[in-house]
Amino acid sequence: MFQQTFKNIDDVLWKEAGCSSELDYTEQSSWMLFLKYLDDLERERAMKAELEGKDYDFIIQGQYQWSQWAAPKNAKGEFDHDTALTGDDLIDFVDRELFPYLQGFKQRAASPDTIEYKIGEIFGEIKNKFRSGYSLRDALELMDALKFRSQDQKHELSALYEEKIKNMGNAGRNGGEYYTPRPLIRAMIQVVGPKIGERIYDGAVGSAGFLCEAHDYLRHPQDGRKLTTSQLETLQTKTFYGKEKKSLAYVIAIMNMILHGIDAPNIIHTNTLAENISDIQEKDRFDVILANPPFGGKERKEVQQNFPIKTGETAFLFLQHFIKSLRAGGRAAVVIKNTFLSNSDNASRALRQELLESCNLHTVLDCPGGTFLGAGVKTVVLFFEKGAPTRKIWYYQLDPGRKMGKTNSLNDNDLKEFVALQASLADSDKSWSVDVQEIDQVSFDLSVKNPNKAEEVALRDPLEILGEIAALDAESAEILSGIREMV
Image 1 (cartoon, rainbow, N blue to C red):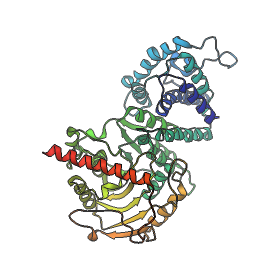
Image 2: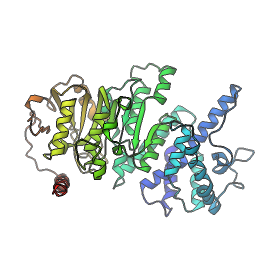
Image 3: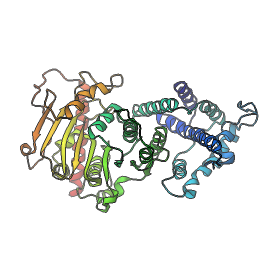
Image 4: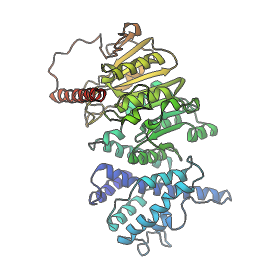
């Protein structure tokens, strides 16, 4: 039911002049889905309160409730076409009355930790892109048919929403920043092993994939035990934290977490890198950090001043932020492009030295090309623990045995061996250990060089070669730009 409804809504959006990509489809679906889901949630709570003989104070009231403007019903409980707004009247109501009312929650909310504040934030950032009130009416009727009462329905909906986010990742330019392959995230979480009571953070939250998967991992323990009321409360309010700069990603992150069961997500709409890391105090630190910061981006000089190691590369600034934001004994798993391991520029060398000296970089997972669809660069995952210097690094070279792509994406089975071997840091054909004393103490080169694998002589795929050339060109341009800035 959900899958066909989403497809039908996309078909409606496809005809809208203001919507031209999967990014637009997901954005417009999100605000309608949010309001419908919230209405169902409120009515469920109102019924529960009535059974208990209590009053329930609706968050969204009067004419702004979904059942009043989006899907009015007659006495028989059927859709009331006679009273339902449509055409220009509907667009006028949404743009001039509904959205301003919802935006006002930010000012009226008691604190930023409330669902009211999140409502205000979301509708302060998102815009209605429907221009035809008749198309919007069609979309609203389709959305109203969805029901989110049972846990199975909510699970199915969250899974389908994840699929929409994945499609955004395949949509081309800038789409990939919203989607990290879920099998990779799950493997990272299994290795880091977060526990209830620990604070988990992603400072480049994107669509909140890491936080949602971490929630599912903690919410459904592998030993089958049920969580206590106190543990569930901790999971709801004191476990997951994130920051996101971009408006659409922020909205999707909030929606995604709500669909995964977090009523008022602790996601802040801000530029993480605008914070001077010297201002980070112990109270600001986290037990677990899981992230895939954007790479290839450029930050202005005033932003670079917030970091001891100056660089324009966004991902390298994020890595400094994560190291500083981790408490002593805290664990992290961070995706970064593999050129970080061997870049010869001063910033890369200094950052590798900082990582090795302030943290135990115990594991490096080398991901195959094509892991991130459309990214065009190879990546690695750095697993480290704060507080003790690195003594030995365990490398694992992931090789699924097939060319990665849209129809051959990463799956959980591909990472089973990595997770199993990592538990004991065992050597194999794909894994090996390097003592930190063997690493050049000038360059701190951490390149992936598998001693158990013979050099390949087979012809390489031309597209892979072109991708590497493009990545090297971009790296060269960055180095030249840095040189020009110093001249």
